[in-house]
Structures are given as C-alpha cells and as structure tokens.
View (cartoon, rainbow, N blue to C red):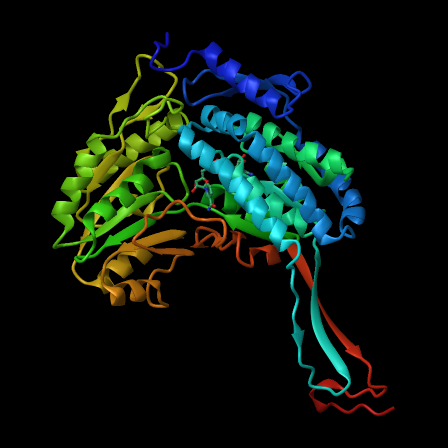
Amino acid sequence: RIPPSLPTEEELRGRVEAAARACGVDLEGHAGPREGRSPVTGTVVSSLAWTAADEVPRAVERAREAFLDWRVVPAPVRGALVKRWAELLTEHKEDLATLVTVEAGKVTSEALGEVQEMIDVCDFAVGLSRQLYGRTMPSERPGHRLSETWHPLGVVGVVSAFNFPVAVWSWNTAVALVCGDLVVWKPSERTPLCALAADALLGRAVREAGHPEALSQVLLGGPEVGEALAADRGVALLSATGSTRMGRSVGPVVAGRLGRSLLELGGNNAAVVAPSADLDLAVRGIVFAAAGTAGQRCTTMRRVIAHRDVVDELTERLVAAYRSLSVGDPSREGTLVGPLLDARSAEAFRVAVDRAVADGGELLVGSERVLEEEAPEAFYVRPAVVRMPAQTEVVHTETFAPLLYVMTYDTLEEAVAMNNAVPQGLSSSIFTRDQAEAELFCSAEGSDCGIVNVNIGTSGAEIGGAFGGEKDTGGGRESGSDAWKAYMRRSTTTVNYSGELPLAQGVTFEV
Ligand code: NAD
C-alpha cells in the first residue's frame, strides 16, 4: 500500500488519462496488452498496443510517398506549421509535463522545462525556415557561377530515450519538418503516453493546415522497432538517442546500407574545480548537474576533478548540500530528486557504489534506498558522493543514477587529461576565475567534449547551440547552430553562361 506521501495508482492513472486526452490522444483507439509502469509508484499507468517490427516498412513507405509533396512546399510554409505546433505545445505545456513526470519521473519544474525546450526549438526552426542558406563560391572559370543549394533529405527515423521523452523528438522533428523531411518516431517503450500526446499535438497542427498526416508517425514498441527502422533503406537519416550499447548496435546497420546516422549516446561528464573557483557557485552548479533528474541525464555530472587546495572544502560543502536534498514524489512542490526508472537502474547504482568502495573510494553521503515500504516497486535513492583515490574502471563507465565521484588534481594539464581519459565525450565544465585556465580548457588542448562550459554545470544546454558529443557519445549534433545540415542534402551547381567550354584545372580536351 502506498501512503499519502506518494500518489495512489488510481490518482496517477487519472492524471495521465486526463492529460493524454487533453492533448488529443484517443486512448481507446490505442488500447492494447502492453502495460506501462510509472517510476513514481512502480504501478501500471497505461495499457497500449505496440507496433510490430514488420509494420515498420509500411510506415516508412507512407512517409516516402508523402515526401514527394512535402519536399516542394516552400520552407517558410513548413515553418508556419511548426509555429502552430509551438502554440499547441504552449497551450498544453502542463498536460505534457504531467505525462513526463508520471512516465519518466522528472520533478515538475524539469518536466515543464522539457516542454519549454520543445517550444524553444520550434521557435528556432520557424526562424530557420527562412534561413536555409547555401553559399555562392567564386568559380575559377570565366562566365561560370558556382553555388550550393540545400534540399530536403527524405524520411528521418527517430529513436529516443526515456529520460527526454518528448524534447529529443522535437529537436529532431521541428528541424526536420522545416528542412522538408518527414519523421517516423520510435519512442522509448517506457514513455509511450508522452509520445502519443506529443504526436497528437503535432497531428492537430498538421490536420488544421491540410498537410499530409504522414508528416509525423509514431510507432510504439521495443528495440526491435528501432532495429527495423535502422535497417530500412527508405530511412534517409536515422537519428538515435540512447545508450552507447544501442548506438553500437544501430550504427553499423545504418552504415551497412550506406545510410546516414546521427548518434546521441551516453556521457560521463566532469567538472574541473580550480583553486580560484567561486565555491558557492561551484557547489550549486555541481549539485544540480549531479543529483538533478536523479542523475538520469546524458549530461549529468558524474565526476568532479578538484584541485588539491580546494578538494576538502568543496567535498564538505557538497556533502552538506546533498544532505538537504529532498527525495520523493516528483510532482510534489519542493521535491528535488525523483525516482530512478526501475529496479535495474537501482541495481546498477548499488553495484557501482560497491565497486567504487572496493576500488578504495570513500562513500561520503547517500546511496540508501528510500520509500521502499510505501512503494516496493518504485526505486528512490539518496544521491551519493564517493571520494576516489583515482579514476578506476567504474569511474570510466556511465552509471545512469545520481552517483558523483570526486577526484583530486595538482596541475591543470593533469585535470584536462583526467577529463579526457574516459571513453565518452559529451559535456564538461571548469569552475575557475582565472581566465587563462578557462581559455585553455576551451581550447584545442583542453576538453575533448562536444559541450565545454565555464562556471556552469555540465547539464542544462540551451537549444541555440549544436548539442552532442564525441567518441562513445557518437559524434552527432542536434538542435541549434548549423545542426540542420544533417537533415538536408547539398547539391553543388555550376552554371556556364559563357558560351565557351573551359575545363576546370586548365585541362584541355580538344575533339
Ligand atoms: P536505451 O539505449 O536503453 O534505449 C534508447 C532507445 O533505443 C529506446 O527507444 C530503445 O527502445 C531503443 N533501443 C535499444 N536498443 C536498441 C537496438 N539494439 N536497436 C534499436 N533500438 C534500440 O537508453 P535509455 O535507457 O532509454 O536512455 C538512457 C541512455 O540514453 C543513457 O546512456 C543516456 O546517456 C543516453 N542519452 C543520450 C542523450 C544524448 O543526447 N547524447 C540524450 C538522452 C539520453
């Protein structure tokens, strides 16, 4: 039995059904045998039908047919659709956030923030729809014009992870739509209602504008549906977000058919804390990045590399801050740390803490499971800090839970080397008031990550920049800057208006 500290199964079901219906989901139409559980209580909140993997080619074919019309719709008209979608997201921000909280376990303000990110990326895409610029290059031949044009690519397959159940899809979809592409989405099997609701809002905007319904399709299902998308030659770009294990599986399949993939995989993000750091700011930045979202962000901070002169004070302050963290019902005001996804996540957390201690680490705070009696099927843990003698093997691994390792350094070169020593390369940060140190960390001989921050934690990126990372993180870039180029094909055009036929590089070929 679940006492009042957590919602009851009926309450949760009521909340998700009301929110999904408000977004336009036909729950009866999607009913089926696949039960979905909420990490908040561990109880069932949905019973839905999944798509069989052998239905994937038909969905891709539908999208390919619709592409023939969509690719010639002017980009600003495509942008107008995304603008309307953003209005609907704004109207239903709280409904979608409710679903994110119930299915992914995010605390309310982070769930609202996730939906805000969708609205932000739509704004970005609307502007982009009038700025899909190609270049004009000087031709080496007289009477010639050399230029490039960006054209729609085709069908984009999106595979997404449970921890950003709606934002990651929208980063892909808002940009793909203005680029003239269509999307077939395989969301995480853990967050099907989030997917149906987000897709229903886009579907409404599509219908209102009279565009083809196949612009966006959602296929509920497990990894086998993602595998089928990866293998389908009709999918021009596969954008897959999830674990490095998943990326290692789908990457070669897409490459084997010479398709394009955009991989957004695991991270193992560190903050360097230099002797000159503002420790108040560093502590706040570290605690949000390391314990927020219960450590279940790809950009979660998993390592602190602190200078010998500040490591003791920093650790002491971190421990005090960790002791004050409220763990519990993510929809309750004041809760900062919600549940882990499931029993497997909790077990991985426990095993990693044990390993770190076996490697000589000192567990300073946290790691206990809480609310176990109230909700035996839900997995709430107290975020943990372990002081490590070195970056042992367990520190090189992404454990998707609130587990922070603290290490010590003496020289900045050593700190940078430790930052870069792990297989992943997503996000990184340095806390320092020394400009030269900050610049070095951001330079070519500094952090090797896709995201490099100064005096900010590793998580919480804005949509205006390109998001993604190197090495085992997969190398993909999504969202802002020129990430849109991955969703288009480039044609280089040379026009000869000279009436002569001079060949490039001065080659002569007289016939
Ligand atoms: P996961 O890899 O278990 O699943 C992600 C998605 O891939 C799901 O939709 C799943 O069904 C699908 N999938 C799994 N195996 C597959 C396969 N062999 N073929 C095709 N599809 C497959 O990840 P998760 O537990 O949902 O999410 C957590 C992971 O995602 C963490 O590693 C986290 O760092 C990563 N992540 C990365 C980013 C990023 O932008 N870099 C963002 C969010 C999450």
